[in-house]
Image (cartoon, rainbow, N blue to C red; front, side, top):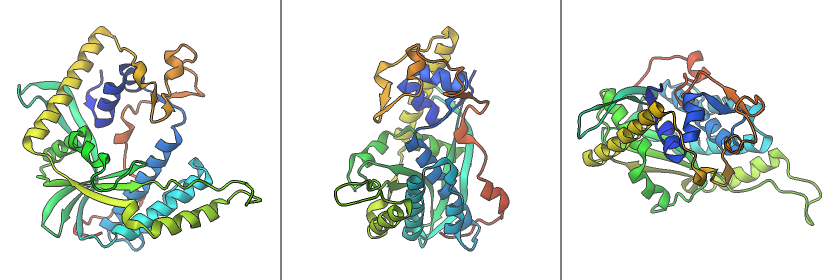
Length: 325
């Protein structure tokens, strides 16, 4: 029986209970993640390396972050785009007055109903991207990194949805379990460029190279840093946090009941999300098997988002907390 509940696993449960069964109870993952997911994971890894280098006051955080990009798992154009975004991110935020207290801070804390005081049987778990002290006001704040294709203009729906975002609430609760009283969360969003590689047409005799694409996108991004790299502050009132914890408690209770009955209904409304077919769609339709190793791999790592630190941290372990980005 699963004993950890993360913001990712709870989101999967609410989306489709059958997918939750395949992922978190039986341990089957898609052999190849969708390109958009791979890109977000790659950017996140680069940011982790950059923030650890900032924390340790190493000489060239940007070079370390760019070096963490694995070109073997990306095509040349996606690799070029990732390089541009990490470079732009560094230029946009390198002088922020933040003292970095921790990077990828992992927590596990009992998931309890605030109203009933009853333990769900699950531990609420997660990794906070960073924890900082903001020198502008002396307050402790959490940091969460995201990439998005949505509009991230001030007042956009993207920011409004954060009021009900379960991950934000879980991270505030996680910070409390680490003995931290966080005043807010710096929600750190990178807008993904929409430019596509240029193809052969009436004006072009050959397709655009990855290097030419990188230079074109870099000119656009670096000329509009404020548009592509935005930060907003998210807070949680005690009443809002309690409401979110009750939601998570109810989710855990539903999972326990389903495990007793071994019943995990499919949700046809989630077979296509964000324009992509669910990776388990063919299994639910009876057209493929979870045992097909070309489609799925079985892993003992049920919650990969809680996996260990990046290799760069292991190579450059430095005990330093009073550092500024």
